[in-house]
Image 1 (cartoon, one colour):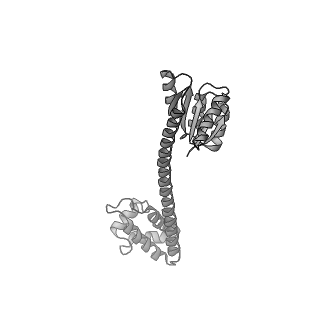
Image 2: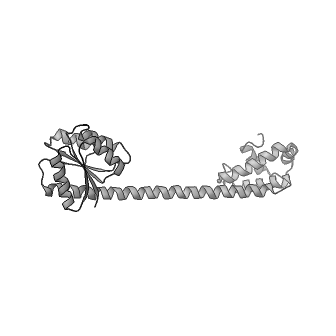
Length: 239
């Protein structure tokens, strides 16, 4: 059974509603004006608010606007209580986000029927929202796991290359791995985190060893034409 907040400035009406709800075993609490009601709702987040329209401090429309503008309470179901239900007033309240109207005086049967309907709807909405939240959290968790794997893989590869003492060997292996990771049409490598590592290694070696750079350009045994083209595409060798 959901938690219900009754906001009504007339003590007799508020007490009567609370008594009817408690007789049905419902968890209900009352607030004597709109301001107190909003403060309580933001701290305790009820499933349903039953609220009078004409009240001091903050009227029912102000209460509804405050709750719907707060992410914590925006999904709370809302029933207006009113002495007269003009179509324009009803439409205005519905546009603000009200779920139902009860015109005073109302019977216990009418009140309970409206409450059960809104609690059922609220439960369904909450279930859908929670499922979507769990789905998003699962996706975020999976992305974090993939990032951890990619980062760990990059660290292992970098350590492996750093352990190769011969710069020519490092370059040849980096070029070989870069070619293997390239797409069929020779454009951007498909595995960015790997290819960036290989390109970084080549850039470092070519910068630190200008002679190696010249050797790579002039040596057909070290660099094939396709590899030269690939390195030019990545800006490692002038066009």
